[in-house]
Structure formats: C-alpha cells, structure tokens
View (cartoon, rainbow, N blue to C red):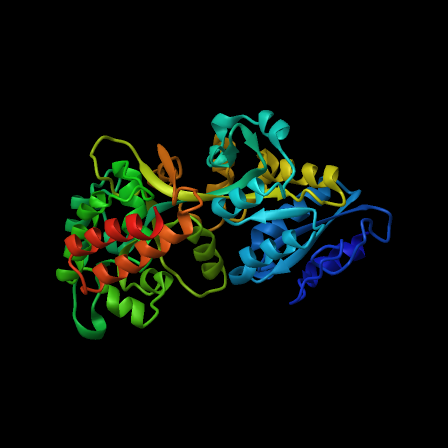
Length: 422
C-alpha cells in the first residue's frame, strides 16, 4: 500500500489528450482497488506538483483512512474546466471532481452529473463556513468547499511604516498610494499596484455597493474607475497599458519593492511563503482589509470558494463522499491552513494554525483581515455569466487603457449586455 501511494504522489496520473467514451476514468484505467486490496478513490485536480493543498489533503485523509488509496488525476490548470466537461460528457468514472469555480459547478450539477451531498451539508456547522451557501441549488448541495479565497490588501511593512491601514476607505487608500510614491526612472517606486484583471475594479465595486454584475446597468462602477484612473494620472500606480503589454505580474511588484500596496486574493499568501522559504524574496509583508466604499467599520470584500464534488458515475461513491466530507471539515481545514491556504471552514483554532505557519505575518491586523464581515461571490452564477463576463472584460480594458472615458465605457457595457445577452 505504501509503495503504491508513494508512486502515485511522485507521478500522478496524467489525463490523456483524447478521452474515450468508455466507462473508465480519466487516467485511462478502470481499477477500483489497489494492489493491496484497499479502495481506490481517484480525484481530478490540476497542477498537482505546484498546488500543495492537494498533497496535504490526500496525505492527511489517507493517514486517518489506511484502507483508502486516493490517487490524483492531474490536469493542466488552464485546460481543467474544458477537460472535466469532456470527461463527464463521455461517462468518465473518476470518483471526485475538484470544482474550480462555482459557474462550472452549477453547470455540472444542473446537468445531473454530480451526486447530491445535501445530507453531508446538513451535518456541517454552516456558521463556520465561508462559501458554503454558494453551492446551494434550490436547497440541495452537490459539492462542499474546502478552501475560500477572498481579496485583501497586501503591503510592504517597511514601505508603509506606521501608517494605519486597518479601516481605509478608497479615498484614504488613494491618498496613501500617492504619499508612498517616490523616485523616477528605474528607481521609481509606486504607492500601489492595480493588476489588470477586471475584478480589481468591478468585483470589489459590486461587493461594496450592491451593484449587480449581471443586471445590465453598470453606473455603480464609475466611482471605482475614477479612483483607479486617478491613481494612474497621479503616477501612483503602474499604468494599465504598461502592465498589460509587458505582462507584469503582481508578485513582482510587491516582492521587488516596486509597489507598497497590492490588492490581491488571499491565495497569494501561500505563494509568498513558498518563495521566501526558497530564498526568492525577503519581503516583510502584511495583510490589511480591502479599502471600503463606506466608512462603517465593516470589511466587505469578494472572493471565490473551491470545492470537491462526487461524480454521479463514481466507482467508489461512498469512499469518495468520505474524502469530500473530511476535506471540507475541520481536519481538512487544518491540513490546508498548515501550508498557508485559507480554508472554507474557520475557527479560532484554525486561524491559530494558519498564523503559526513559518513566515506568516502574525500581527493583529493580518489576523483581523482574515475574518471579513462579508465575502461576495466574485461573479454571480447564471447561464449568461460567461457572455457578460467577456463584455465587461473588454470594456474594462478600453477604459483602463484610456481608449474610452468612464462614461463611454459604462454606457457601452449597458448597451452591449442588453443587446447581446439579455
């Protein structure tokens, strides 16, 4: 058993380029038990070697369930949604499917391709979960979240100094970004960096104003765009066009000291820790709540959970459910918290584990940041989500690159969503 497991970890099963429609799993095999007689649970995931949470969950579960051999079926992250869609359409029998986003989850569930997990969800302490409600489809659950990422404000402690970042409004943030900006040419240091993704402006605006990204009326984006463009005009952030054309990474801006503050998802913490452990950066970083539209003491942000589901055609459904339930529960949460990943289940004990990771900033502000008041789903789920997302992305790029004014871009969003989608 031990040898089999070790081999699986070193060389996880790679999905073949072409999937057949036979009743086997994505690895191309049809075995349901290991050579030692244990039950095999195969789990579809992505980038196994560079995504340590999967290894942590599999090893933690196997340690408590020696009769079950969990075998990863590795799929390239960029191809994952399309590959899983093809797998399920072809009758694939891979037991557990990682749900990379809620949109894909809703599609698989409504196509009756997943086993219900409603009974398992009923047994959870829902008040301790972030993101669980996003899997509620008319009172039924077909996946359980094991991690829940949300956006925070990463910052360089040495550059920020004693400035208070605990309850910033966006106006406060803009003033600080201008204050931290200095130098010129190759010595230029920006007060902040706003990555090129549309969510940096649009999703946070939706979360903090109540605006509906699927609604067809995008006037609620205007204030956030004016703030972002104002920072560009003040040269307090790298221009969107420069960041886009040069494919600038958000990681490089903070870790090389080019920017003092960077709004980004909590998933970045684990990457920063890994880089530091490998000697790739020595930055003294911390986390603060995202700046707010309203100065009301609340910490409202946006994010997205990640979950496990059980394939309706799973060969070992009972063992698969056991893994999914364990991974989403307190023990799974502890396993991922130990490597700096934010679990869906939280408690004081889990937070202690998260902040005890070597290199994790353990100051009071960072800890408070990890307990937001509200985390809104990054993009609502609908059969129109994909089309609207593309329109909003295209118009975002036009506004941020200066090819359209804010009013022109928002007007075009309204028109295109109504004419092309609704």
